[in-house]
Amino acid sequence: MKTNIVVVACVFPGLMMFSVSGIASSEFQQWMQQQSMGVEAQKKEFQEYKDKRDKEFTDFLKKNWKAVDIVKGEVADEVPKPDVMPVAPRTPEPVEPVVKPVVVTVPEPEPIKKPETVPVATTQGKRANVDFFGRQVVFYYDASLRKKLNPIINNEAVSDYWSALSRVEYEGLLNQLNEQKRALQLNDWAYASLIHKLAEAIDNHRRNESALLSWFLLAKSGYKARVAFNSSDIYLLVPSKQEMFDISYFTFSGKRYYAVEFDGSRQQLGRVYTYDGEYPDVTKDFDMHVTPVVASNDKDDRRHLSFVFEGKKYNIDVTYDRGRVKFLSTYPQLSLDLYFGSGVYKVTATPLQKQLAAQMRGMSEQQAVNFLLRFVQTSLKYETDERQFGEENYLFPEETLFYPYSDCEDRAVLFAWLVQSLLNLQVIGLDYPGHVAAAVHFSDDVGGDSVVYQGKRYVVTDPTYTNANAGMTMPEFKQFKPTVINY
Image (cartoon, rainbow, N blue to C red; front, side):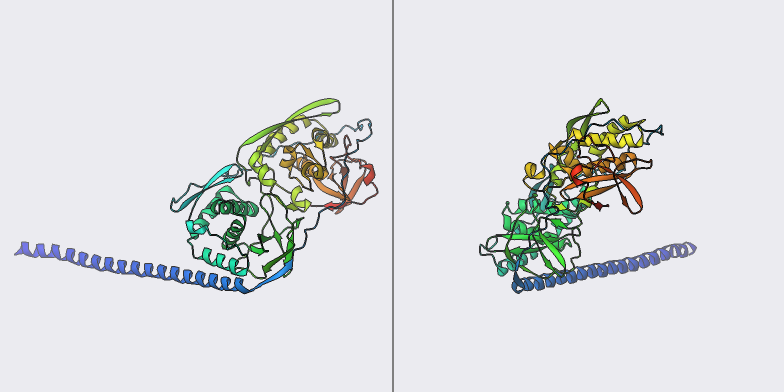
């Protein structure tokens, strides 16, 4: 009797626990099912919103086009540059009082994550291999993204094209693009270039279809991209936070939309049809600032440079990243302050800084600046952009070290970066009619020509005036008051 009671007492709590556990499990499953249904409802609602948004935009595209005359892009400086730069008259090197040696520093490369492609997370769909300035990037996409444009180009054809793309599974491709943008540390221009190269791969390099797919993917990525067309061509149009020069554009609501090409070429459009409106929820204008790692592919080349300073010959080996130089060549022409303020990739920056810094140890501040002037003035060959490229073409520092020739603004940008990074002195650009130089704010008293800017005296330093020292202005520009380029 006693035993039976004990058994019942032992079994009953177990039954209670099982019962409670069963109820809890059932409630949990019910809760999970509700959550799942809620997520599915949200997905459905969002999909319906996207479908509605695309339908409304498709309807908008069918009827809101008008003819506009594209404005020819402004030219940064229409005054022709001299074909040959003068050589400064030989003068004794300045006798300087005994001063403490200049402090030369080689900036430690900031710890940055190396750009690298993201492994492909999916192999569903059709494969596209993209050569992104020497770096191979793989994408998988819905084959239905490859559409053939109606040969008669009009608003109906463009509207139908957008409508067809919006019904394709494109979200997975957008996710892949965003992952690569993050991993490769792409700025806006590089991301748009990646999209364009991908669109060309998908559309077998058909120009009009590639432009339309680029427009679609940029808009879906949040950029204010638009298109224009004439009887034969589709043009991609994007707004920029910075002015682009010599690029055709049109203006809506005070904002310029530039007809860009991603190979560095420029086109004259004439009369086209376009629309005044944005795809819903897009917010981004292009920011054209160049970051120090964008489009690097770690395939470097070398170039040997030599020059003479104070009777001694110096030999410098320059390293540059081929992919980055190729990428920079696609850039539209921008305001000079962006070139003066651009970052330099560490593969180029650090070895060059170390070599120059080692030679400047023990020099005075003025000597060190003259040393850097002579390096830029005489180790690089001068030629106008018109002769080298057939058009005006501002160069970033890495491009100046790569191309066989450079002109005044290219040298001023390179020189300014060297002085700031190695000597920690403030530098401004000087913009004369048809010529660009620089000026340095010395901590010591240095004579010669100068300009006063924001209460500080900057001594003229011209990295194109061959053999000229700090304080010497090229004779034909002494009569002009230069515009200051502050960055």
